[in-house]
Amino acid sequence: MNTQTDLSSSEIRLTSFSHGGGCGCKIAPGVLADILKQSGGFPVPKELLVGIETADDAAVYKLNDEQALVATTDFFMPIVDDPYDFGRIAATNAISDVYAMGGTPIMALALVGMPINKLPLDTIGRILRGGESICAEAGIPVAGGHTIDSVEPIYGLVVMGLVHPARVKRNADARTGDRLILGKGLGVGILSAALKKNALDDAGYRTMIESTTRLNKPGQRLSDLRGVHAITDVTGFGLLGHALELARGAGKTVRLDMGRVPLLPQVAGLAAQGFVTGASARNWAGYGTQVDLAATLTSVQQSILTDPQTSGGLLVSCAPEAVDEVLSVFHRDGFAQATEIGTVVDGLPRVEVAA
Image (cartoon, rainbow, N blue to C red; front, side, top):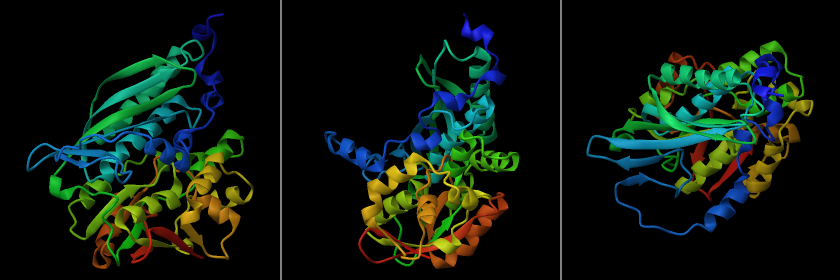
């Protein structure tokens, strides 16, 4: 039987091919740390402004006094069944890393791995068109790429961008007294867990797609604000994991207020019903010893804070006097849930969460 001609796109559930979807596919943080410990050192040129030292969102290489190249890559297995939506989500997620460095994307290369004997060519084509549509929205071409025949569907991008060397926003430059602002509500992993078990309604699906396909363009403008000290985006390690990376890079303590953390609609109820991902537990196992949760926080709230976000929001560390301007940048771009959620204080590099 020729699968390519006998199966239609409507009969395919892309998520059935995936052992984990979206950024929930990431290697657990503890395992990743052990792997990276084994990698050998190498000479680092002075032009490399950002490398692997603080687990930042992208590499940055200085070209001249006015320009630095931002380079990143991201790819994963399907988080939704609709091929076009899968392509859009994966592309948005990959481009986000350039915005998180304060950069402007300039072009992308597609990374495509597909089980050719199991997926109709039309399905694969729709995935690619979905990614291209987001690249068009970002104003960049898909200038090439690479394809392989793989067991699971994999799609993503290599993305390159430009930023002024003096305006690079690393995840390691938070300062004592900074306020933390989160650009999107949490809960993508929880919504995707419900979707995989046929428990997500149409409104919940629309919420999920709207969040995961919204480009983090405010990062470009935030790089111009003197009061913005550090930016990262919240993805596979959840809010706690990426806040911890920010704390480690700065050598500070990050304090979060659970009551102010924005959640996507339906997330709290679905989490209470048990719709959480395995990646959430792996995240906690990887970094929980460096997080202090208020005694009154529930296991459901812990699951939300460790929930892997696919194409999540920007986490911005800024001076107190810059909060209003940062929020204004987000809100003007349609990020209605952008909210101040915490502070940076002197202390050991860890995260503390108040109820």
